[in-house]
Image (tube, rainbow, N blue to C red; front, top):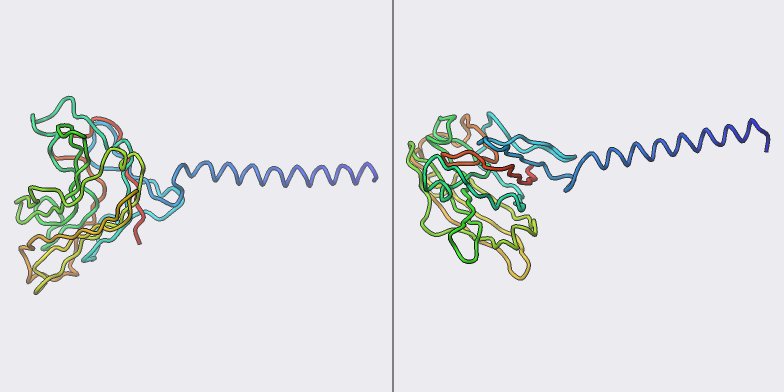
Length: 231
C-alpha cells in the first residue's frame, strides 16, 4: 500500500469515527426515556416546561379538542414535601395532569376537566393518589376517595399508564375519565365521571390544553418531573 493510500484510508476511518461519535453524542443528548416528552416544574413554579426529548411534545395552548388521551408516568420526584406551605393544608391539595378548559372559557380553574394527583405523607405506607377532577363555574369537583393509588415502589418504578378524559355521556353532559395499564402484579382499569355544567355548549369550541401543573396554592418545593406520550 502506498503512502497516499494509507493516508486516504486513515482519513476515511477518521471520518467514519467522527460520524459514530456525533451520532452517539446526539443519542446521549436526548436524555433518559428517549421518545417520552419530559415535563419539568421548577422549584417555586406552578407550570411545567416541556422538552420533547426525541419525541413529540404534548398538545398545548389553544385547541378545539374534546378529549385527551395520553400515556404518562411519574418518577421519584413526585414524592414531594411542602415545607413552607401557603396554607397549612397545601400538602393535601391536588396537583394536575394535562386536561382542557371548556364551556367557552380559556381558564381551566373556571371550567375544565383533568386528573388531579397528590403525594400523601400522612398515610402508612405513603402513596400517590390520582382522582378525576373538574371545575364547574369555579367550583372544584373531585371525589373523597381516589380513583387510583400508586405505592412508593410503583412511583419509583416509572410505569406508564394510559389516561383519558373526554366530553361524553347523555347530551354531552359528562366528563368521562379512565386509567388503564399494567403495574407489577396487577392490572389497572378504572373509570369515573363528573358533571359538565354546559351541555349545550359545542364540544369543539375553543379550549386551552393544559400541561403538568403543581398546586393548589403552594408552588413546587423541588423540581418535579413527569413523562408523557400524546398523539
